[in-house]
Image (cartoon, rainbow, N blue to C red; front, top):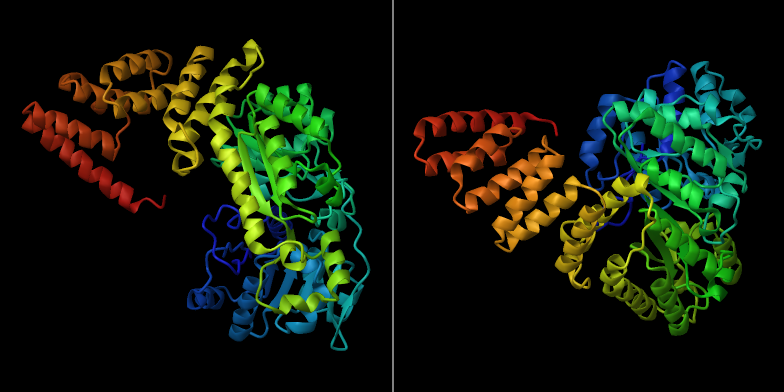
Length: 578
């Protein structure tokens, strides 16, 4: 189970994803002959009766709850509901949020029976096997397990890491998902991150063939877009290139995003990643102040950051920056340094975080030493602790102002950065680079940036990106995006010329045909528009336009036929689970 978070979110994209480890664990259990179901309850807060009904219907022997940090209280509340329904349900917590607080959780929450500490597949398999055989006394011999002995929390022997990740059951055989991972671990030691302690700075890898086979299985189930969630995807250059070449040779029509580090990407890696469908790489920049980066143990230089962003952008991959503010020693001066670096690297996407302190991090250890607090601070119903709350040199008002300055600088400069993108002149990358510019144009007209008031010149920026995309290579999105902009400005003749050109390259495009039909209607060319709407893939919108054309032409017989088709289609849409 993936439980809900304590606090509401304006957007749910960061909480609704079931952790990939849950899929691996479920797949291992299924292939061992057990019945297993995944419940994604990220949106179930306040729905106690609904949750209780589902648990009563399922009557699970075991309820395994995946805990990060923000969903810790959600997991605890669900465990209480499960125990009220049946005290026989065995409740297990796992994940980083439980791993780092195993003793605290077992001390204070009797509804939690055990905790899987660290990597969970083998521990869970052994535990279920022993439970199946009724060998409760043997549980203390299972490495990687925390439980109560003589009413006190105890941790069994340390569990060794799984040496060969390819021996794990492939969850893509049993489930469909699009957050994937090709490795576990990260060699670096950033003080705000729990990965160094979870994985002990050791990295293990799936083979390229295992990983690409997993993508292929998921692609056959309808997944075309993937989030590659490795801490640092580009860690082993030859392996990354092998993965990319296998994706290309498989002829999968997919796109994907990844996470990397600025000092381990180069032109060859970026070239093959773009050819294989990578459209975005996120980099942890954290701060423009080298002093703050040093305090966070983020050992990268301004020059490394700049080179990575320039190179990534030049291959038609969107470089996205993670910035942290409200760090130790943060001042107006250090925020100005971050803004200067931002203007230098010109990110086309950015995420700005207030520095949080989480269990399992070096910052958390320092926090406990500084304040004398214990893990019992988590008995308060809170998701996290902001660093500024623990530092007398910072306050909330000041930190929020820092964030506002960073976001304003990013949004106000974004159109200029988009306008001045420099791309590699490589013919084989032309389709990818055209797609990159067209997709970026959409973000200004319909996507993330379209609703942000702080972004100036949205229409001009989008129009320039669409036009530039079409000078590089024909692109359906660019034709459509630019034509719609012409239509909004009542330039229907221009739109018709553009869409007719686009249909020479994409004759089967129902979107281009439908868009062309709209402009033909506005120009009074009703017979041509009607023919297009009837020829395109049936949709409520296209049939509605066709009806209007037929009515205006006085063809009542055709109106009746279209109306019947429209009613039939509307019934189908209503019944569809999608």
